[in-house]
Image (cartoon, rainbow, N blue to C red; front, side, top):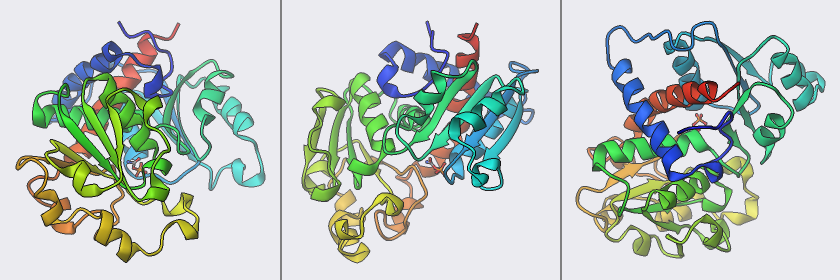
Length: 308
Ligand code: CP
């Protein structure tokens, strides 16, 4: 049974919690495919999206998720708010909570920001991405997408490729997939790899070459190069990167013939992912986006059900 008032990271979840989110998301997914997409499950509740970093998919899908469940949803971004006048994260959040907010969905550039707020606020807090730490709802929607396309998570081999060290998506996915019984291979340029994968789980390994990681994989997850978190010295050129660590047709041919290709977005087309693959039959990129609404509906319902 789900007991978490907040969703701060996959690191806090057991396999049964992940299963609970995915099972509930199946119901939301079915609702979202109907002509009449509304439920009244969260009628009268208020969800605030508090975003200190740019977002298209996460912010929009949390907004649609809340509205589909009948909640009132308000979007606050750092630009255009009093954050731009120097108000602190905590003061901003406390003032928004004082308006009787039920759930605060937080994206921030600092690792631990969502946990910091959860310890100081009375409302539920959902982490929508904190620095290079975690992006739990992304990993949950990726798991939902994989399971719909492959029928399971247990026993699959998933290659996570690219800027692993700076990626909260990679970290949350490695933690989740390991807990659900998948084998995870992390690969990328030497400067973008974690020193150790041990903390991410016993089924997670680091491989220095893309060829090795993709060989026989069931799922190939490409990561965005985090230009905003990189020092210039870490990356010689995007052309060099595309040649060595970009996923093109010949590289994808090393994976299983029915391998699923994922990318959290936004895609740097022609850098980490060939445009033909991004838009091709093996791509699950837009399935991921659709799953994002269902998974976020599930998370909003579950954290509120666990709140006093
Ligand atoms: N995947 C993801 O977090 O995308 P956004 O930055 O657009 O929300």
